[in-house]
Image 1: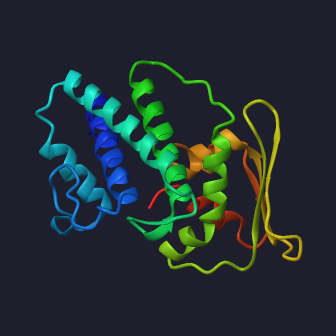
Image 2: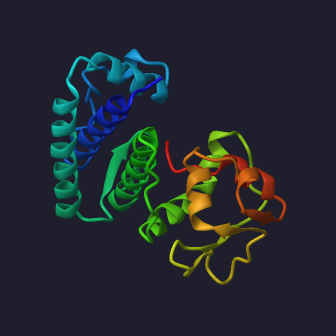
Length: 218
């Protein structure tokens, strides 16, 4: 039920939260003025935060988002990419948090564009999002209370035709392999497409589960 302005407001709020994380201020941070303990889960918190600040005009939201995006880029540029920072799912590397922010920004950019009948052209920056989806497969399974049978690999084709291979170390042979379009994989991981409606193919003991559970968000 969100409008395009709501989506942009959500991005501004979460950009500000990412800056707080990088600067070590996330503990006690109130998303949109709403404390984390006031919501049952992350989705409820995000919705409550948008509702709490929905009275801002579209122009005010645009300006806030632009400012937050610049602040976020500056925060990530100034920190060690390997430094551990706190986020929704616990502590993680700053580089990983930057990838999650890139993923969320891309997902919501397409959401907003689609409201106006625009389809943004995908670029090879999706590599970072595809890698994030691959790296977090164990997390996705843990969130669902599932157990992986073994290592997973992604063999994808990027937007400009390049081959993207995400595999474990050579001494760990993958049991499950996902193949297909990197754009499709990112859309499925962002819950903007169903795997059955894409060209993605998977084989191995966890094939169906990986396509159902893969994600790029907490």
